[in-house]
Image (cartoon, rainbow, N blue to C red):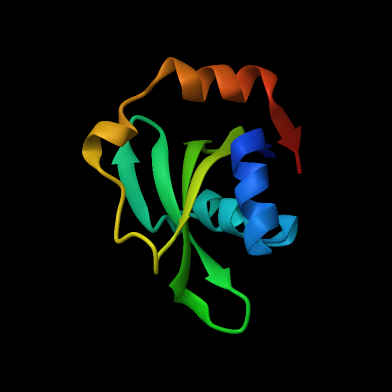
Length: 107
């Protein structure tokens, strides 16, 4: 499986101290079928642990995911700042697709 993060997500992860290893672990959990929320259309939500606290109070990531192929981390937020993402924010947008095709970093 190839794992990528968009530039905006990379900035978020860096600011919050989320290591690439944590992102890889989240992608591999999804590959094993341990998906925190399937939002439809190849979009999933995975929880990321906050250092020293665990996943429940940590971060949430929105991932464009295709089993056995690729995972693109496109959006992240702290659970303490926001309960969830709105449905209208999940609509497939050209911005996500554009970010995935040109401004990603492979992990």
